Image (tube, rainbow, N blue to C red; front, top):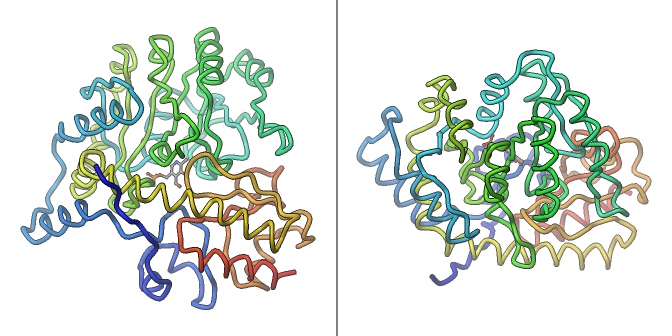
Length: 383
Ligand SMILES: Cc1ncc(COP(=O)(O)O)c(C=O)c1O
């Protein structure tokens, strides 16, 4: 399949969008938080949606075996992972999948492990299910955000029931190696911990890194792991509300039989079929998007090296989120708030990912290089 040229839409057009990224701020603010891309949705998905709408095909969601089949074929094609498509369960979104799974396998007060800094909704999911958060943070940037395996082992030993893994990692852009994941598998097996692997960013992994699906790591991984994922991030269709849960073992599959039935039908019909189309017909669009994101992640590095060389930035291995250390700029207690107030540029504050990273901001580079240039100019205006 050839590549599609995927480029950001003009800013003026983006400003007409109705999504939260474009509604949360006044029109003089340049918004770079929220993980949505400024790229047009892949043509096959648009064609499908237009066809469904024009035929008033907008009813409730029934069984969609096509989705499991499409994901299994994609997983095999891209990651050499053989997936049993019968063990794929649709959910409204990844958030709902996480919350319903946590409700199913824990009781209030049980311990759930996270590794901060991490996607802020990991905190809200744990709070919503009245679980006890245990945090074993990554090492610092100088350590390459090293995994604290000793801390994890101790937490497992101390009775953690579930470990929420973000793989690839938001906001660090880190891709777990096979060895790292296998180490987690053997610890989880030893201490009877369930690992829920959120792999929503996986299709956007850059070619120099290998994304390893957790459940592709053999029988032990299948016996301790459940994956939650969606097409919503990689194909930019979050508003369509569809995600899915993957198990690959009889025991995990049996556990999921007790999920509320509504987990499935609260997803959207448009979302389920758009997801099927994304995984089956949109590799060429995905390759084009990755190429543009690859260029943008390096462009941002060049821009920062030229204009703000003291800002810390490790080029991410996956996704479109840059994790920037602004501590050298002396922007006060909350650099994101200062940038918004003085520079009129919005980022996610590092504090929402970890209390240990208040001087960081998360910048979304799934946009044009003009917007990235303007964003850096606006950080400079905030000084
Ligand atoms: C790691 C991770 N999980 C889940 C989500 C959200 O997924 P959903 O909209 O399907 O709940 C995001 C969104 O940015 C994310 O980064």
